[in-house]
Length: 50
Length: 192
Image (tube, rainbow over all chains, first blue to last red; front, side):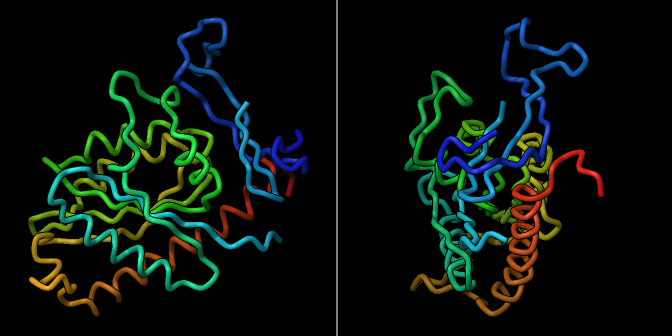
């Protein structure tokens, strides 16, 4: 994915379970939360979690 | 490799009036400022003023989140209150998530007694881990908080404190650099 701030290609460096949602449609029952991917922009340091 | 200055803010984690941790936070902040190639700022959670009728990312403070977003490491200065950390510190930390992932953090713990806040350090570790932060193995331990400065506001036994905090900061800076390189260049699942 591209950085929403500067447009550079971001690096996928982590996968994180987000436990803050109550929406059963979004929760992965294997992990008990929403499994999200973390990306960091090597140019400006922006982080996205999706 | 990215040449942006390393960013390591210092968070003062108590709002209590007369807080002894303020002196420690100022000292640590000064020591971070001495480090070449490192930018810092002192974040006083007293100034953040999050609402208390909600919690988490729903009550983000854009300036605070932006600072954490662009940080490479964090120093958390926390007092030990009843063996734990202040609730308002947790309240502030919980307003971010993605901003913390794979970033270094070190704890400077402050206690009135003689154990240097070791219990609050241990209590904070699982929280910081779940937030996605990477804890270093050095802590800053400040015992006898009420006597940290003399009647003129000068730090007592400054040389000893500097010697200790230099070890802590060297480790934190190293970890911040390594994790920044990893965040920006090494993909999860990447083959060696």
